[in-house]
Image 1 (cartoon, rainbow, N blue to C red):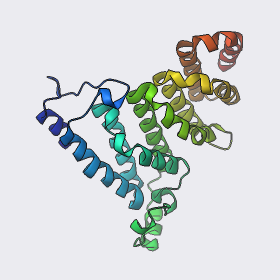
Image 2: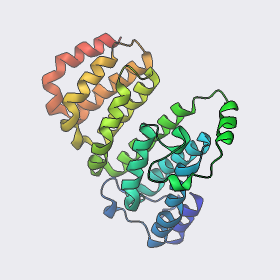
Image 3: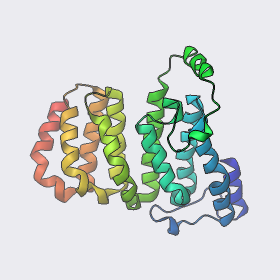
Image 4: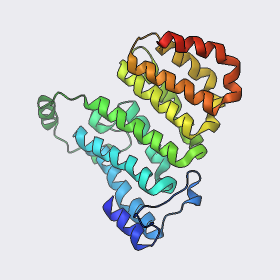
Length: 254
């Protein structure tokens, strides 16, 4: 990250506070200097992919996902352009719990992990630190999604269409409340950043909110209330005919 920022400063695209003032939306509207593009596309992101393919330590995975989130914050919508399809593939793999750190294998990249010792994997399990790393990874994945949406704005629509069904799976009763809470929050943040997609998903999202309003969980209730606020603000024309239903739902959350 620091090297990347240094390259940006060297190329004179940072302000007095050493920040790159990118614009939400199309990557072409916030281009990166070619030197930065080469650094991210040829060194940083391929290295992250190697980590996803072969790293069994979930704390390393967590930090890598955090770095990718920070990249969208610091470098804007253009930073992932060349690797967007592959990043989507990895996000889906994380949601399906099929990355190497989650399952011990990753289809399509098996040659990168064939030397791993199963006994070492068992030892890692025995040294469990009591932290739910799968939950942390899910949180990092949803953070990456929502910050990527904030960078791209309505340009995120096509990416979300590939992720939506996998996210919705986590809103069902067979998942812990904490997972459902994170996913509902993530979807709402994407709607706030990319309002053009709301009409497409409105009718299917409202039943999700209704179904999860039955839990009595305060954190989940807050995210449901926030979701209703996002819909009211970003999709007023669609929201208005359902006003009484949403009022009843909000009363149920108290």
